[in-house]
Image (cartoon, rainbow, N blue to C red):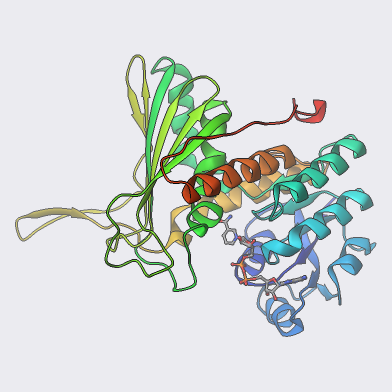
Length: 336
Ligand SMILES: NC(=O)c1ccc[n+]([C@@H]2O[C@H](COP(=O)([O-])OP(=O)(O)OC[C@H]3O[C@@H](n4cnc5c(N)ncnc54)[C@H](O)[C@@H]3O)[C@@H](O)[C@H]2O)c1
């Protein structure tokens, strides 16, 4: 049986996910679309989902008998209401990050899902589905002994004028915050932010670059350079230092060119290209679980912990050099 999926929010990523479900993946089709901007829903319908019905509201879409599972790809501030409605309807729900814009909002989702008593929510932390990170995790678990340190970097060539200092956490570091918990099977206990000399390419409301220092419950120390005006490319680096050796995230595949006395390969510049293949894998996982009436992959709990950890990092930005503790509540049995 094909899973009938409704998409709430047909902007850039909503439309792209609808395309992959209808044209690339197996076991599902898009049967409904909804967007506060009806023109956006119509454009997505025309481009990639001709058989989908356009519904006026997200709530109507969730309630529709033509919809078995829901994709929430609207603006972040609207995610919570739709995820809660999907849980109440007992329908599997894929929610793009962030799960909610506050930790309290994410907690409400955790509580609702725990009360429902079964996994219904997958959060869109797609790096867990990236082939490179999966290879790195396998090596970290089997070959380099106990992890001791992680050195990482998240670099963008430029960011728009409206990108301000806290967005370096909520929009950029959020992916590292999730993927290192998964990579190390660990949780954070503290965060600290230090600011190096500011790049002359940063604007008045953005301190760039910044270095985020995280400490985990097992004692691993993580340093992440977030540098969103690095100019040269979109570059994700991650090296795990273990007791017996080091393991690094592979570089994206690129042709090596020898020319004019130089050895070169191109570096990506657009973030959309870096984890493009992982979106296919994450949504196929969603479809396969939804066909069984459940969800897999990153949980509401992961979304909640990411929100708590992000808030601590923003507090650490506001008090440079101060170590901000991160305390997690007890994990409900559903997420054991
Ligand atoms: N995992 C990733 O790498 C990744 C990448 C891109 C975006 N995202 C996330 O996906 C979400 C959407 O991002 P985007 O780039 O597609 O943004 P976008 O602005 O292109 O699209 C968002 C769409 O949601 C619609 N919308 C807003 N409020 C709505 C509501 N209440 N009900 C229905 N529709 C509503 C807007 O009209 C718009 O069409 C964001 O939360 C973003 O953080 C995640």
